[in-house]
Image (cartoon, rainbow, N blue to C red; front, side, top):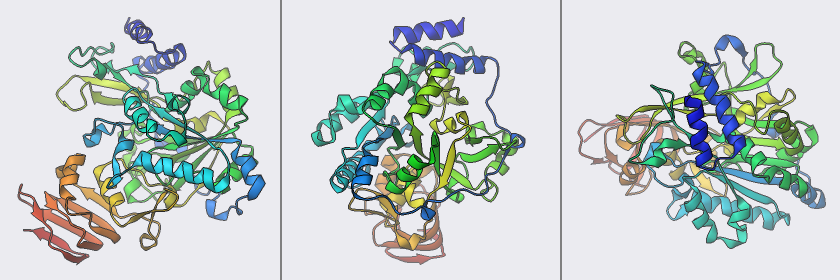
Length: 466
């Protein structure tokens, strides 16, 4: 009965039938108590991979232009950043004063078109929560393209009452009754909107997909040439895990070695968490930069009814994400990188850390706003040479969970972190651009009153304020 109620609700909201059938598969797994967990005993580590640094130089001139004409770039732009207290598209968050993620993405695309002469197709997948903000932004950048031709709109699905497994009812704020189904929704969106057929009809054979909050993920001509020549249907860019990545999804192989798979933290049994976070065992972290051969994707979608049978992540939340006392719900999601297991001949390639500069927390934002990263002329963001390919590991306590709390702490400017290996901050402090942190630094303020850090250099120091 609850499954039928979900279907009726989605039909009434105008959700496409392909998305409804995909959701019904996810719901059936939930109802059957199939947790979707991937225990350590069922997988084995990936030990070696090809690397970007070993690839030959990119093709030049007409060969590159021809190759680019067969490729499209798609950015996932459905996140609101509610975990950081945002109520708008996270890509509209400022990376530096007056410069948002979307500003830099537009700069990347425009630079790429000017530098190569190729009219590379550009797409954004928005959610129902980010569409209006993003379309307003795109209207201010007419050279990038018509918003109607750029936007793909992510589906929405009901949140499931954790107690009854019925679609949750929240009449005070009906929008809270819905959630996006994760970025694995990319595949039914491409299928149901006709976008996949249109791209193929236009001669586009390869799709490069990445997150809008990962400014290091520009289209790399060497990777494009490698993937085009490989014949693979699907490839994932991965990078070496650091302490900052212990909780992120990692690449693995099935126990028989036949398939690559992606395991997210929500899919790891609690008993295996220590092994999951062992970066010497599971060495490669999914950057969510993906390369997809569109004709093979079309065939796979046709075989499975318009969507891929991806592993389902059962995220436990509250119906109102800002009210932890509101009823518990399940949000049934999938990860687009999990499609690697749908193709037996899929592959992966190790890339430098410069291709992975996302912002998931305010600690990430602090690092990005510091001098540990630089913005290049082409709009990409990368670690400065002093970091030697590894970003500083920043740990901020609950005083900085929300963006406005971090903004207050950075009113005097971001500290220098380019020579910092780790930073741990406990209690409210105020930084300035005159503060330089080196090595491993701990800053503690046991009071509830914010304290300004005196200007100066702090190297391998435990600093207690005031």
